[in-house]
Amino acid sequence: MAIIYFLIGCSILLALVFLIAFFWANKSGQHKDLYTPSVRILFDDEVKSKDKKA
Image (cartoon, rainbow, N blue to C red; front, side, top):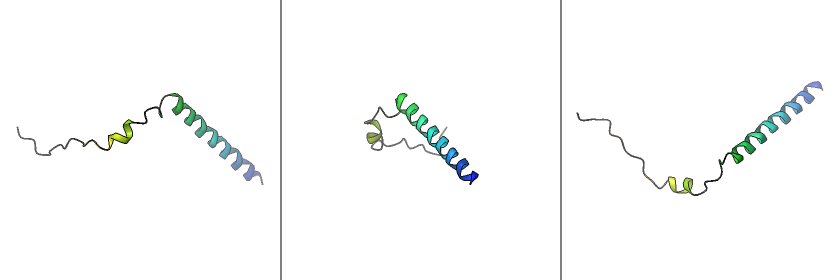
């Protein structure tokens, strides 16, 4: 029975860590730019050739 109390405590602690991480990411502006990720996929990456001619 004591292990259940330990596991409940660990799960609450882990949930608090994730909640703090979410609030920190939200405060630091992680979710502010809503436009760029939707357009980023439309741009092609530069193709780098493996053969460099000197």
